[in-house]
Image 1: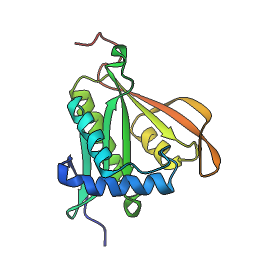
Image 2: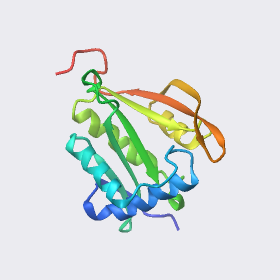
Image 3: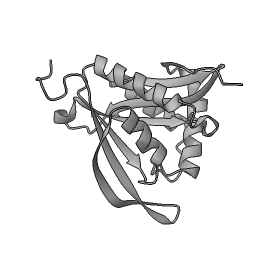
Length: 177
């Protein structure tokens, strides 16, 4: 039986325990995050509040009442000249990977960031062997922008950082409003 299509919606406070569980798994078992220890639920709550306070979307994918992934964007860097560029983050529950959830989340995130006037979306992808994330971003219009070789150490090995970029809206063709 084919699973129901996920619904992408704004996250709610009561989604945070599941968001925390998904991220905890990726910190402990994956190289997409360079964190070594999973942050607490309180820290995840603080991080989400920061994203929302900055006026950016924090989305979840839900299927049959269960959160199967989440995505958000936040300032790429705090300096004012970067204010039209955002960095995305996206994580999918391990049992839901490869089911199109990441793509639905990323496409919705892109549209929502364009709607608030963002001009560039940057993906800072942990591990050049993270082919799923690289392929997802490429399928959603991101292009390779660079590579920081051996920039992280996790699981007793050096990890690269892959940089990808996607234009949003008018990008650099017009001044921001």
